[in-house]
Image (cartoon, rainbow, N blue to C red):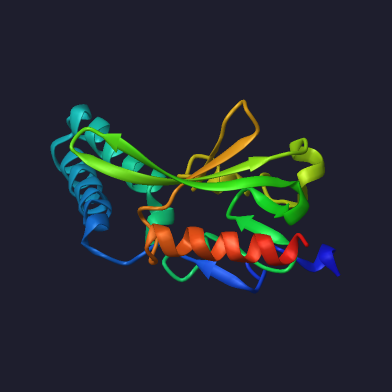
Length: 176
């Protein structure tokens, strides 16, 4: 039953990246990469190819931001799932916090999931092994050395406090 859980079909509550104008630079850099490639072919100058590689690299890294229909984080009866990370069982979670972090002129919200078990026993399903073509793409999570999973919740299609409240409510319900 649990073995059937894969990254694309987990069910339950899910949150995806939001579709708004902040991801416009991804499209712009893709167009710039094409323009620079064309300029390199027409002029034969190698510096255009270097600029094309930089623009294409930025676009490639940020492609997951454009996948608005794909669930990125969420929860179901088994635990919390995170794209390219896995499914964390409810009993392995010590606490779930929403932290405001001041960065330059803005404040970002980060969901911090602290684990009370080693990662190998906390994961019901391990999705950290990605296809080779996704290795260098943006990940929605970071893992700290203190056994804490950190997720920036700003780019998602739901407000940070709503995501946090829903995860807390489900955690309290399913761990009992």
